[in-house]
Length: 597
Image (cartoon, rainbow, N blue to C red; front, side):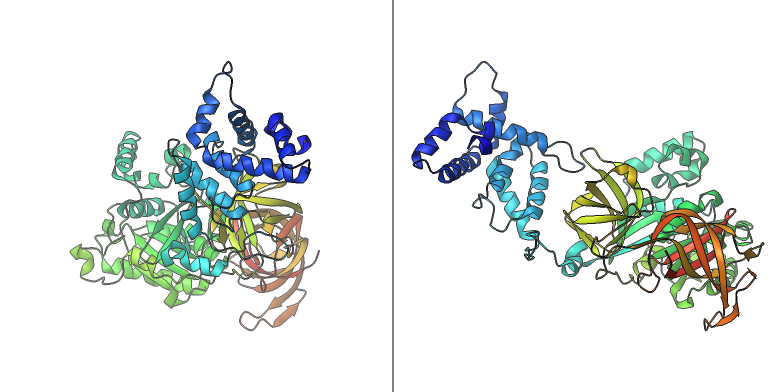
């Protein structure tokens, strides 16, 4: 018995139990354990706190001594991911659970629910008694899906599809990226939208206005809602992808504010790769639109990039319309130029909407504009209504789990965190995952969605996972976490069908490129040019070409320096797309057709 119970039970109690059970060790153990759990539930948490305060000099009765020795080792072990260490007062309940004491908590409470329980207990104030905590757990438990036992494990399986419909009060999830030329007013436009929606309170906004005035950048106040780092504010340009969430009538939107500056295109690709729909912001003022749209401007490149990364629906916010006095002619001039270009880029006309706006003035963002200059010729939707009317894409919940890592950081407790968008499948707390290319397995200890801990997440969610069981050094941005039963393929050589953009130098065998794929950017070389294809039919028009020039469709073989994890386009659209860049400009978009080795 001592081996099993160690110090947690006084000798006297053991002796008594052995005598009571007529020297049957098994019975004696059960007796001691059941006594322990009863006493734990009886003594309220205030008791436990008092016990811990008693000074060393005072003698204690055996029960309270045992209470403490049972609690203390458990406190040191118990850490809930991302939270501070749990305090002693919530442990009695958890011990009761471990001892299988099922009267206080309803039966069928499994590991998943225990996690929910500990999460609930965290929030309960220290003064409330254990009984109210238990009541709260059982309430919480009613909302937890009823576990269906699998034959191999007792882990509750969640019917993710049903849960997805229940979640967000029936609202659909949509990932939106905001793109456009530098200084088109992307951050200001979205910052003002968030402010008008009430996502930024008046006090914070007032603070930003005062600070931006001091810095001599009064017009940047709304941009500071999304540009949070000192450097971004100082330079007045967005550098990294800022992420926030807001809600419309029918959707929950994850908003990604992408940088427009040419130097930060790799960051913009990372943002766009995680998006379902996009808002392209263009500057209506004279000369500015042209600068962004002509060669070398980012409007064209961003448009091509998001289309190649699988975004099919686009809202074009024609911003700063107040600077041209809301002229209808200027609006039409811009939409006709852009319309032709976007059609060539592969957007359907029915999937592109044009909205005149003013980011700084807040006109036509959340409610339809009342300005007579605009209403006399524009009767369409405002920006928020347009975002709300986007169709959410099909989520690949039925496919095996895939998550591409966008960021890695150390957690407060044991383990570390990775963030990224789930491309396919779903995940539950406690599941084993395989990380590729390092080929290491780990366990998902916690899942956080929009800064709130959850039990599961599915395709389309931007999550942060707390992982244990592997070394943080082995994980890089761009690694893919997948289902160990159906791992993702890893290779250094693959074949792909590419569309060549406007390039100045023809592409030949051995051409060095930068492969941008999801969140990875990896140096690669073009090993072979296999054939040139017909644009619309896909038939081979020329075998083994010597070079590729602009606008051509071709099959090529690529070799990367390090192994990359990717999928065939036909199996996983999201994971079979990539971009090729060379000396600061995007030269091609491609689809993976065959994985070699």
